[in-house]
Image (cartoon, rainbow, N blue to C red):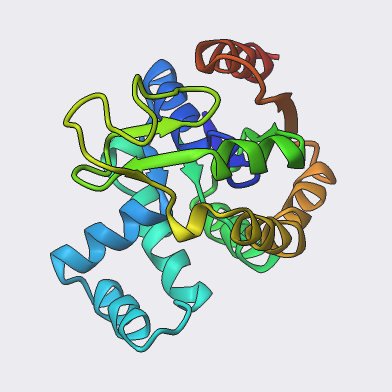
Amino acid sequence: MRIVLVGPPGAGKGTQAAFLAKNLSIPHISTGDLFRANISQGTELGKKAKSYMDAGQLVPDEVTIGMAKDRMEQPDAVNGFLLDGFPRNVSQAEALDVALKADDVTLDAVLDLEVPEDEVVKRIAGRRICRNDSAHVFHVEYKQPKAEGVCDTCGGELYQRDDDKEETVRKRLEVYHTQTEPIIDYYREQGLVVTISALGKVEDVTTRAMEALKR
């Protein structure tokens, strides 16, 4: 299957992408991984992306699209892929259609993870990260540490990242609504959109997604 995963920040896209890709035996292709791989390998696209990033500028769509196209043409993606974080806007979605058409393939589904805005804010603004190891993540409501403000694993101080503060989260949601959300309507016109609720336990959302994709 060839799938695009869409949803607001805090919807659990990365988590669901990993589970779905494993269940469907297709590679999980995320924008972040594409950038890191191309930059670390010193590809021409990676060098271009790094030059923009070092200058504090947004990486142009054509560079991101080039990276995605190269990755989708790798042998492990011959039977499908799951795109996470790409396309981010309608122009990227249109360019993706052109790239796929050139290879005589089409998308099978666009999985839209639906989460109420207040829940997104609660999920992200409630996160607390360990200063010693950012892999240790807690939540003021959903995953409370045994001692307030202290990491259960190493005893490090828990803090709230600037990116996770409510004001920042709401700004990120505005960007999502204006730039990324329109691709849902774009793909809906093609009959590709499958919308599911991303509320509840991770495994329940995965089950819901697999059932929806089978339909």
